[in-house]
Each structure stands twice: as structure tokens, then as C-alpha cells.
Length: 65
Image 1 (cartoon, rainbow, N blue to C red):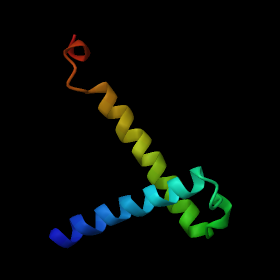
Image 2 (cartoon, one colour):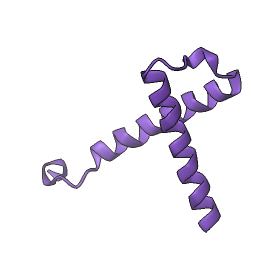
Image 3 (tube, rainbow, N blue to C red):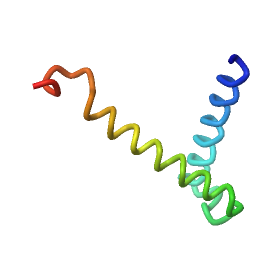
Image 4 (cartoon, rainbow, N blue to C red):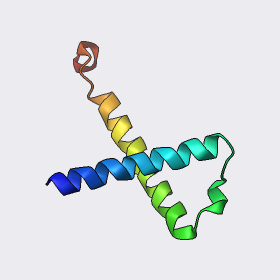
């Protein structure tokens, strides 16, 4: 369980690092291997879905009317 949490945290750090390097123009998305590109696109899509669902069911009392 501890190893899994550590791996997941490192995966998130790696994803954030890649995003920051792309934002700064150090690397381009197309510089990454195709398999890495696919994984990043998949994770970004999942993250968007989770953030959308979280926005629908947030702790804000106005959302429960």
C-alpha cells in the first residue's frame, strides 16, 4: 500500500514536471515518444472528468439545492 501511494505520487510529480517543461518551452509535446503522449492525454482526460464531477458535487451548500 505504501509503495503504491509512493508510485502514484511520483507519477503525478513526473506529469507535473513534463507539463512545466512544456509550458516553459524546454520540450515540446511532440518530442515525447508516442506511448508517453498517449498516457499523458489519457491522464489529462481523466483529470478533467474528475474535476468536472467534483465541481458538481462540491461541498458548497448552494450545490445541494
